[in-house]
Image (tube, rainbow, N blue to C red; front, side, top):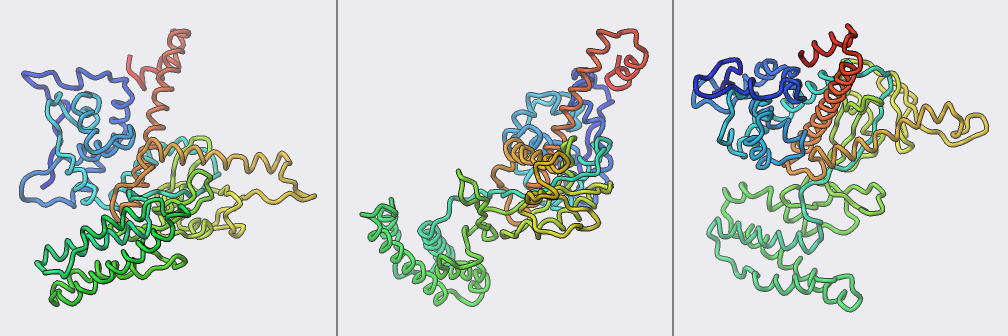
Amino acid sequence: MKGKSPDQQQRNLFLPILKDIVNPNHELVILAHKIDWQGLEDEFSDLYSHTGQPGMPIRMMVGLLLLKRIYNLGDETVMDQWLQNPYYQYFCGESVFQWQYPCDPSDMVHFRKRIGKKGVEKIFRLSVELREDEIRTKDLLVDSTAQEKNITYPTDAKLLIKVIKRCNKIADTEQITQRQSYRRTIKKLMLAQRFAHHPKRKKKANAALRKLRTLAGRLVRELERKLNEQALNAYAGDLNLFHQVISQKRNDTNKIYSLHEPEVACIAKGKAHKKFEFGSKVSFAVVPGSNIIVGVQTFLGNPNDTITLEPTLKHVDTSCGKKFKNVILDRGYKVKNQVNGITVVTPKPPNSKQPYSSSTMRKKCRKRAGIEPIIGHVKQYCRMQRNFLKGGNGDQMNALLAATGFNLKGLLNKIKEQKLCALIFRIFWPNHSRISLVYRLNFGS
């Protein structure tokens, strides 16, 4: 059953309401008034039953999701900050200051699962609509990056040891008597795997790896013999995954890098400090100048950048109602002159007719570098550095929420700048009627 947010205008006989405590010119208060909370309530109300115990209010849960991304907090830490910050509580729809946690941190996990990918798309679209008036250019920047998954650095030895442990766990759950669990043996083999690239230890490490592969295959085959038909059907996906890990070779395609995240791909972006990244590829579309992210698309595997361009531009059409004329790319995109009616602009190799160093070409293409720091900020400050959400849907949801946090963080900074500029004008030109009117309309008397 859908929970109801308290009325922020309702007075309390014993406690002062938050509206009387918070500064009405604070950026979070102004942002809270700009967001269409009722629209979100209408969008997500169909996901709730009409009977049963009321859940957390939709404004509360959406507000916590946004605060988490804007201020780079976790599910647990955002609760601690919410408890001591009246502006966080006002933003989430509380009427009086609360002394207890709004909900359990696991409720945020359940709410993300409830709204799913479509619900996160609606929240992202809201962040674009709030800044739609800032989009004054017909150009668009598009680039891709790697979104790392929350997995350990994969090696053959780690994966085989996990297969052995998972087989032992399945045997214990199904009460199967094994010939041998190899719990002591794998400890010795793990020690033999240390410093495997050292010339004096390479032979011993390779022998230990072969032994681990043999033991893993032996335990998987034993499970297939001793499990009954119902259990075999229940564990069919796990057993197929185990066989793929055991049989995969160095130069195979579509390799498994994690047992709990089998969709993870190995992405090489040519970085000197990090040769490989394990996760998914994300493509961003950014409006230059205003730095608004208007399109985010996640791709499983490691597709070429050329393949990612058209789906990204389609997502821009669905999330942003405005039409763009040019899309500026780097040389990694090998595409036609036009994609979905948008002209493609890329730096061309120097020649006698149109050298790259000419001023016209430089002005057209040097904007493209502006997307690189935006991607870095989204990763570092909006929780896309490492993705903790599960599965392919978790990849898309994490990227969309990170982009939403970046857009709203930019809007908060703009509100601060407007407030500061209006205050300076009011100090130095107090009798200017237009400036005084703008200040009163936006920030009160």
